[in-house]
Image 1 (tube, rainbow over the protein chains, first blue to last red):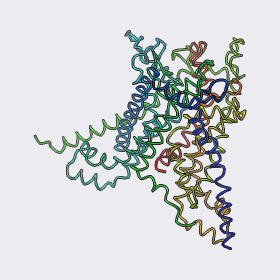
Image 2: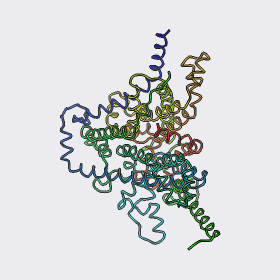
Image 3: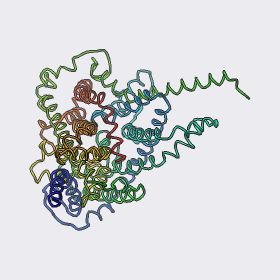
Length: 303
Length: 290
């Protein structure tokens, strides 16, 4: 009896878990290992494995573009992160201070850019902020008799912060507002009775009580921003000019899948990705400790 | 200076009205780009918003984008071919992600076994780091297996990317169901499989629905995998068709046509969004809280 129960447990686990493990192994774990291996080769359009030990890493250190790329990555991640967190906080505070129906509608509306296909969102933003006279903002400005503004040529970082931030702040708004709603109303009522203004309540009660949610969002968002490049690829594609908005993943993408055959420099491209994978892994381990994520994985008590 | 009570009431009322005004304006901001897109799609002028016409939707009749310019038309696939590919990718992704994660989420929630924490941890880390960084290796794998330039290859890669979130969210939903419910089913003579299909699965239906909706929309909007892995234009999805038109010379002159095509592409998204918004929020929160 005992043996058959063990057996049926094994059977259930195997049958129901195998597909997930298989997919994760074949399309996530193997590619991660493969990326590291490719970074040690001169793999190019001929798809021949020519080992070159750490040559690619040496090349990365001496490459004059590396500094620009790292710089762009830092600006992109910190700028977008600041936009996502601060604007998300504003949305959360605003939507919890008005009637619940309006607040819910507001958060839903801000979820829309996230749900839109990336191509459409990028196209709309490019059209609105186009530096050409045909762009929406510029055609409005011209019709009023003013000089057109070269939006994305001059203000390329703010443009990217808006394009990405409209999407990222919907997530932070939802997370923060559900945290704000879980604050016991007694605290806020007591503060109001004592004559505290809304500003004081936000600063002295709400913000301290949701600081862990904010920290978690910042940590989590840093990881995903480090690896995000889709909206840059779709809008400015590393420009304008010389590597101004070329972040690390985008650089890897261009090295591997640029327009010409000479671009298929998979070995060197994988070097950038490997560095990002290592950074991501280190950050994950740090977060693991800081946020005590282990408690999410408590073993089930019964079986 | 002391204020009389009526002055205080007026001040509070003004502030409340101001607060609501700001809130309404902020709530409408993300809808503006969408409104502009619709206005452009029905515009008489090819670049500016002007008048109202249905002419931009002519392509719906035959699926041919430039009927007056056959040479140029040949560069692009039939719109309905692209739409079909988009639907296949979205449905394939939805079906497999939902099926696989509803099984895996159950086992991870209810059983303890060796490697459970490692598996969950891996899913959490991978979910945090978008798998698009693995494009180079995925390209190599698809090339070796002969799946490059096929929709199947894209679907497989897409499933892998969306699966970790699905497992986490559904594990959370299963965790929320008390053990008593399942034990009652077992006492009544159901096997573990029977209890899973007839008792547990119906109870986590909102979770299953959320993941299905999320993975459908994720597949429907996918761009980078198509752009990287697909060369043949008959295997394009709508996202690739629109992007390719947008960056071409002809497209820059026909913005209204692209807008009309975008509206066609967007309708299913908007319908699903309006009806399923509360489920999508569940995925967003569940994905972070675990």
